[in-house]
Length: 634
Image 1 (cartoon, rainbow, N blue to C red):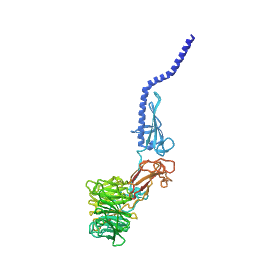
Image 2 (cartoon, one colour):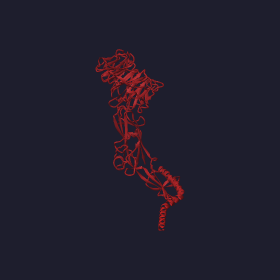
Image 3 (spheres, one colour):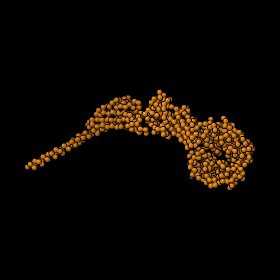
Image 4 (tube, rainbow, N blue to C red):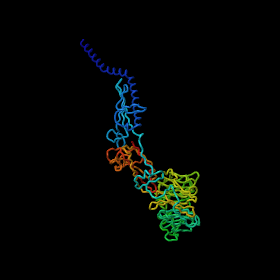
C-alpha cells in the first residue's frame, strides 16, 4: 500500500514538471497565433512609413543640401507640396517614426570607415526607424547614405585666356581649337593659316622645279625636270625675320628627279643610265661633279636619293641600292641591294632601316633591314589599299610613317602607319581624303601637323594629326601652279618654316611660316591660376580632355589649401595624386582625396590649383590639354 502511494506522488511530480515546460510555450503560441495577423498588418504599415521616410528625405536633400546636412534626429513634415525636416521623432497612431543624420568619414582611398579617417562633407549617414508597441513591441530600421550632387558646381579652364593666366614652364598656350596647352612654343605663324607673305626666289633658267630638301639655313632644289633648268640649286636662307633666300651656287647638265644636300656636298638622282647618282662639291664655285654611282642591274632612272653617314641610298626601277660614300670621288662602289616588290618612288633611312614607298605593286611601302649593307632584306610592309605610293616620311623616333599615294576617286591619299614594330604587315592608324589633289610629297611639322602638297584642287593642305586615327584638314592654300616638293625646317631661334617648290616659273621657291615652331622639349609643366570660390568647400572630382599622340604623355596633380590671412595668394599648395600623396598622378577622371589635418593638402578647402606634367619622346609631337574641370560642393 505504501508502494502504491509513492508511485502516485512521483506521477504527480512528473506531470507538474511537464506542465511547467509546456505551458509557457503553449501560451506563447496561443498569444502569437491570436496576434499574428494584426502584427503582420502592423509590419506592412511600418514598411510603408519607412519607405515614405526614405523617399521624402531625398526630396529634402535635392532641394537644399545645407538645410539637410545638419546632424541630429528629425521627422519629416509635408508642407506646400514638398517635405521639410522638423526636430525629434513623430507619432503616427500606433507608430513612432524618426531619422538620424550623422557625419561620414573616409580613409585616404575614399572608403567609408567607422573610426578615424577624414570628414566627408558631401556625404551623410541616415538611420531611419519606425517602431510600434502593439500587438507586440517591434521596430524596423534602414541605414543609407546620401551625397550632395545636384547643387554641385563646376570649375573649368578651357579658353586661351584661362590658360594664359597660369604659369608656363617649357609649355605654351595656343588657340587652334579655342585654347589649349602644349609643349614648347616658338615661331610667329600658324600652320593652319598659311600665307604667302614671305620673300620667294626665282630659280635660274626656265626649268620646272621638282625637288627640294633642306636643313636650317640651307635649302637644295632641283629644277631639272626638263633640259632647260638647273640640275641643282644651293640656297641660303637667313635666320632673320623675315627670312631672306639667296642662291649660293648652281650645277647643270643633268635631268633631276630628286636631290639631297649636306653642308659641303650635293647629290642628284638623275635619268642618266651610266650615272644615276651625281655627287657635287660645293667647295668652289662654279660647283663641280666629283663622283657618281652607276646602278649595276636594270637601266632604270634613279627616282630618289638619301644619304646617311658614309652610305648613299638610291631607288631605281625595282631596286634599292646602297653605295659607299666614305669617299666622294670617282665611281662609288656598290655595297648592297634589294629587289623591291614594286617600283621604288622614295626612300628614307632611320637607324638600321630604310623605308621605301612603292608603286606598281599591291603594297605601298616596304621596310628594309640595312644593318648589314651586303645582306639587306625586307622585314615589314604596308598595304593601305590605296593608289601607287608616292612619298614616305618617318618621324624622329621611327614609330610612325606617313605616306601619300596617287589621287583616287574611291580611295584616300594620306595614311598614318604604325611602324613601331618593323616586322610583318604594318597597320594603318588613320587616313585622309585629299579632295581631288594628286599628292606628290609631304612633311610632318611641329604642332602635330602634317602638310601634303601636289597638283590639282587645293595644292597645299595642312592636316591636324593630334588624333592620328582621324586626321583633319585645318588649313591650306590654292596655288593653281601646283606644288612639286616640300621640306620643313626649324631655325635655331625656334622659328619654323616650310619650303615649297612650285610651278610658278617666276618664283619657284617659296617660304611659308609655321608655328608653334621648334622641336618640342622632352618635358614641361603648366601650373594653373588659383581658383577661390570665396568659401570653404569640398572639391569632389577632376575631369579633363587631352590628346596624347604617339610617345607623348600628360598627367596631373591637384593642390587644395586653406587660406592664409583670409586670402589664397599665400596658401601652401601641395600637389598630390588620387591617393593623397605626391607620388601619384591623375591619368583619368577620378575623385579627389579628403584630408583635414591642417597640413599640406587640405580638402575641404577654399583654394585650388592644378599642375599638368607634359612629356614626349618624339621631339615633333606634343600632348595637348584642351580643358580641365573640378566638381565642387558649395
